[in-house]
Length: 125
Image 1 (tube, rainbow, N blue to C red):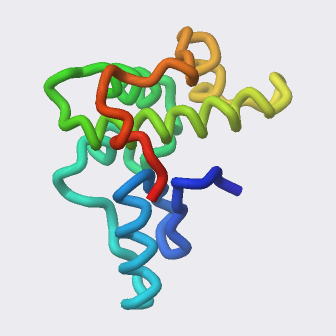
Image 2 (image 1 turned 90 degrees about the horizontal axis):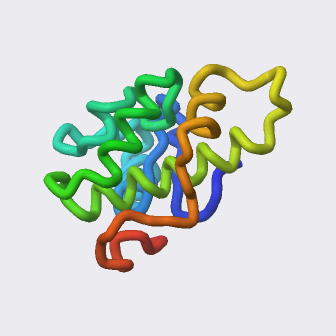
């Protein structure tokens, strides 16, 4: 189960955060189909389902979170996804962690240090 502010599509396993989560839930509820990932959102170019599945995707998402060239709301959503993934990985017994889980825990990602953006981009809708 995901934390508040995140939404997992029941149609295609994509995970959405923040404003994108609200929009995806609304589309899926009204149209009874997957809304699919937003084509212009950087997170889906860095990690296919937004939750990282490989160490490379973890690196890409962490770098995106602190990249000032990326739109602030997208950086906030990426950070929310990484926070959730960090929490999940830290609760899994080490022997059962996949490489992405090991990577986020070893990469010195600090879920308590958000990117330097306006806090409204980190709020739950």
